[in-house]
Length: 438
Image (cartoon, rainbow, N blue to C red; front, side, top):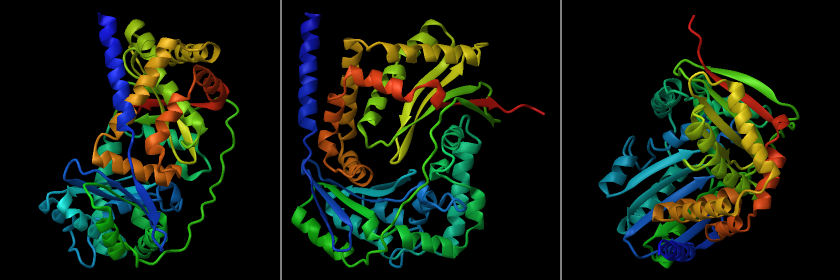
């Protein structure tokens, strides 16, 4: 009976996945190069308006890091038609919510409103692009905001600089070596004209994708988009020609110190390909197999059974040009770094030499299906997926068929990528240690 119930539940779950992934959308370009994506869903009176700019930390002058993230804050300061500090007040007064976020590859701004305020959302985003006020008062104000964010999230947070250690250890030439939040010294040294020039270069219609998703009338929405965005002039085409990294051919070690920790962390880090290619999806599955949940192989071995680690985790940090696969472990008690690494390597070697079990493989497929459904379970999530697939992957329809990439992964693929990318000779070992007291 239990097996029958499980089977029925699996069939129901599969049906949910198959129906949930069918997301219809329309996309087109304005004459100025802005890409537009529309998704109509009239089941709830909600709409999300978002704009993703193809600019992130990797696009910055290496002597002026932090600009992309800085603009995530600065472009809420106000415009010629929105008073300073009024942007978010307008959103909340009209029943909406808004946010923004930045990565190494892009910056995304969005608002979610009751659908009767869709036009307001479009106007707000056109104001942000058309004529924001970028003055010294705003720069000085947001400079302090960013400094406080850095203090809270990184400088005073245990393990807060692990991402910095990862990026700077893995990249020496490519601008991925710079962190998203950047250098406070660089921001302090920047002139107002440099911020204005950064905006003129990257915040242009032909470097942006606009998404409108939810309870919309497409014809009406197109009219408003034409009204608010079509006459914004295009900018100069952006040319990206980043230096390529030399292959890692022998294992190296680096050490970072953190005054906020008492327990060291050890990371095995490998450079992996762009998140656009199939192998990136296989590496995502491999990271799930190694450390996602209490039944994963590294957790069972190091945390549950042998009590050698307080925590262990594997993840594929996917980025547009190149990515990082990392395995992190915090030792339990007197467990040595060598013991942790040897045990981790032993589990990797098993994957390199033997196919994982059919049972474990099916579990990975189920997790991928579940994650796929959950990422598109809200209008806000659908909007983010649509615009992300367009900007970073060049294929908006991945919102419907990305799951097919996972479904076409085989156990042989997992074995292959483990052998191809997780060789000891191709990694950097990061010793993230407590700062020694003087």
